[in-house]
Image 1 (spheres, rainbow, N blue to C red):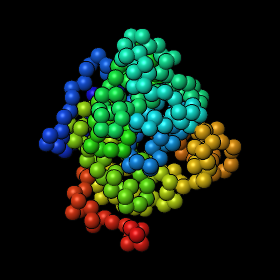
Image 2: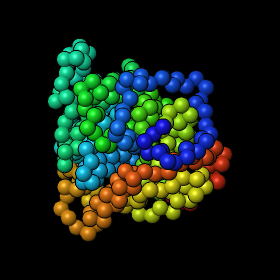
Image 3: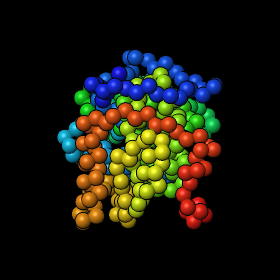
Image 4: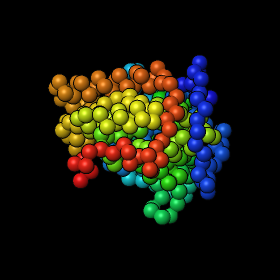
Amino acid sequence: MSPLDSNKQVPNLRGEDGEGSVQVQMDPKVKIEGAKVFAVYGKGGIGKSTTSSNLSVAFSKLGKKVLQIGCDPKHDSTFTLTGRLVPTVIDILKEVDFHAEELRPDDFVYEGFNGVKCVEAGGPPAGTGCGGYVVGQTVKLLKQNHMLEETDVVIFDVLGDVVCGGFAAPLQHADRAIIVTANDFDSIYAMNRIIAAVQAKSKNYNVRLAGCIANRSKDTDEVDRYCKEVGFKRVAHLPDLDAIRKSRLKKKTLFEMDDNEEIQLVQKEYLRLAQLLWDGTDPLAPQPLEAVSYTHLTLPTSDLV
């Protein structure tokens, strides 16, 4: 059972792995122990990496030792933490002909802003392999080099494709899954699919849903309406600010930007969210909408054009 579920009753979750789904049994030797592990999901381009990086800094501001693992072949998850695109684990393994014993932590772990440790798993070229294998090898390598022993928080920044093995692999390690969404039809539709996928995997894994983050959104009415319909919860609201976009252009986290009232408010929201997640959230078991039902929960026509 997840350490976040101590003294909490885990709900009976519905949802089965789909026919033909392959769910590989995790090697207990590479299990992440001691740290609280969060997996951040959302559709492509929704701002997962920016959100993950700022959340990592927020945890570090609370005095936690944080490790962020980017799980996308684009390897830009930790871009604002380190100020550059760091080499990926898979590329470094190639250089040593996959003799992992030749590697040291400094070869693939990079220090980002405020001491956040950064790792980019990377991935195989399109159509040539499984991203799930790369995530598994990354965790194994971290374990072998004792990089998880003094870590308080691990954040997986996960690619958005729900049919990829790279999507499912972090769920083997995570205590809680968090979904980044926005107050529009496409983002909420993607969130519904992600919920269904996580629910299916949670049949065999300890991961549970923590809630969603409304990102790049002035309002949250549609997100809140969806959450009420399916039994989900919005745990944070991050407005659509130019300062957030500019921070990525400047290769910085939001906590490194010049202070103004707007930035301070968003920083406080990240710190509040980090404290909420650290203290522990109730495991949620939303009932994702079927495609037919979902059509009854659409946004106004003007928003769909």
